Length: 103
Image (cartoon, rainbow, N blue to C red; front, side):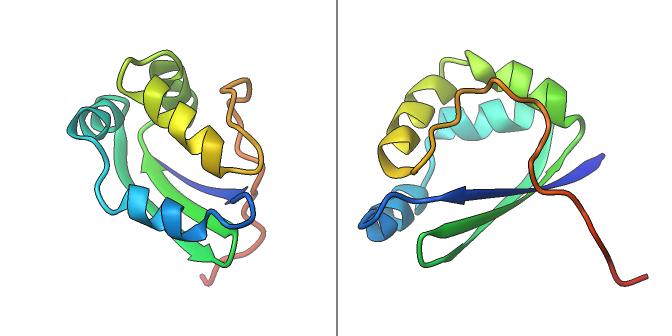
């Protein structure tokens, strides 16, 4: 299993809408995430900054599984309206790397 940290940023003024949309994700998306090996996905928000912590069997495989998944495509289109940079699924490596952890 992998633990992956991600960082995204909201467009100005989209904070409340992002929170509202995430209050309940679609059942089909929940199933697609679980099928893709996601064990946990937590998101923290500080202003427009979003910090994700994902526990997943295989991050690359998850991205490949979700890229064209019929439950994920409309969700990503909705997120593209709210995020400063749209996720086009071109990368399979997270941009946030672990620097230190308490032993």
